[in-house]
Image 1 (spheres, helix red, strand yellow):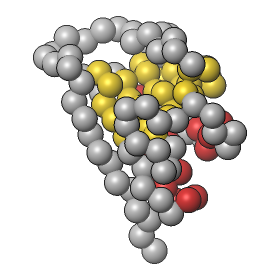
Image 2 (image 1 turned 180 degrees about the vertical axis):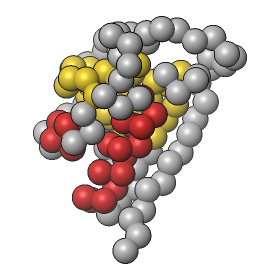
Image 3 (image 1 turned 45 degrees about the vertical axis):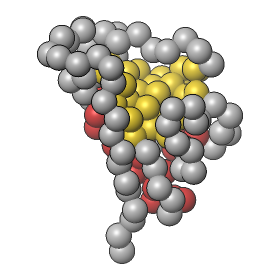
Image 4 (image 1 turned 90 degrees about the horizontal axis):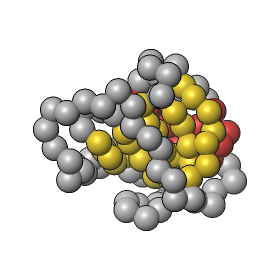
Amino acid sequence: MKYPFIVALATAALAGCVTSPYTPPPTQDTRALGESKLAPKDAAQCIGQAWAQSTQQQVWMQYMLANDQAFDVYVPGQQPPSGSAAVVRKSPTGAGSWLGFRGADSGAAGAISQCQ
């Protein structure tokens, strides 16, 4: 059985090959949910696939920073730029990812925790 996992990628205004060692999380209505051992891109894909499989709905994943440093993964049924989303950023401790959530979806933390 195949599950729909549609990824829509939007490039950020920031382009080039500049790599920051750490991408701070957004401050606007974003609450921290923990860290993941997965790289940002892998954690974002994990979250998107978990949501797509559990809901059988389209999930949008948006690049927020070049070089796979930051992603927003929108809750099924939500769309960029202002929907509820998992916020995935490069970890401040080096390897892995910082995970957060923006919006009002009570079931999101459980799905995100599967990708830690």
